Image (cartoon, rainbow, N blue to C red; front, side, top):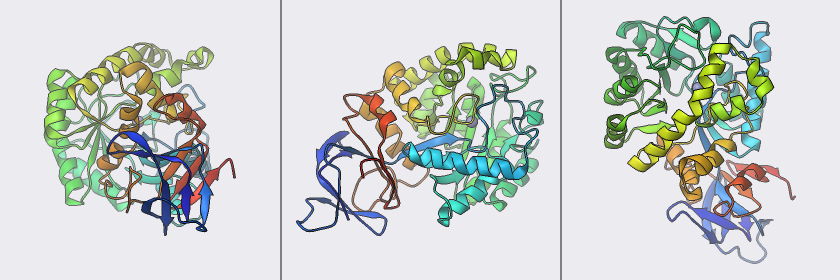
Length: 397
Ligand SMILES: [Zn+2]
């Protein structure tokens, strides 16, 4: 089958080209001119992009509750799994064909991943970390299904092995405190120490995968980079030295810039949050804006990630991260698209399969009705989604 008559985004040049895209057995097999009489899906007037990759999601979390301290207190376990399944579907329908879940809830998200891969339900392709490796923390009761406490390299090894045994694709660690945490926890404080981070990296590398390091604190970022973590999540307090280290090591930054915007956009919602968390969010956007602008200038590799799952940050609204990168942090539309496709695939080690419209790649293709290089906001109007060569959404059909 051919997707014919549209413009397609060429990741190599960062520009759109005219051409038809042939899809066979879930892969892109040719880009050129569809022979007359061949089976075609009409893409005239549409702008084709590679399926977007969100490298930081939490599909098991309920984002409708402002106070994020144990959102599932009264829920049945099965309700959490069903919620996650719907969120995976929301991701797919808004154009996120692949997502990295970096903190699930009692492994419900891994069951959802399996059901999607088996074709039982529709959803984004998921890469999952299982539970997050955390030190003994006052915030564990906020996330009873999400945190795995471990203190010391030996305990970290055991916790990492447990996630892999439960089907995790990668390991997620807390190298610093978090914003969504108790008043006793500081985002700029160190959590796992270098010997503990190194233990997580060892186990990940033994198992041919990587570590994603949640790190706000300056030294937490440096510890994680030195220990060989593949990505820094958030990176709020990075300094010039940290950025330089990331460039030298090829460490990715996953910015999650939109969290403060998503949290604060409805003042009545934000008022219902825990007061200390509300206060933290008020300063977060300015910090992250400075940070992401500087990271781009320094040449840090950025892979798009939204942190959907934080309060007010809903699955299906992921494209706001991409538009905010352009509107507030100095990215050109083409750069933001590359961060959301090619760089995301590279972070996942899937650069030969995902992240570009090119011969041989998996046929994950989305479309919008105008040129996003002229108007990045059109990403909120995705009207066609194909994953693995199957069209899950085609609003004009
Ligand atoms: Zn997160």
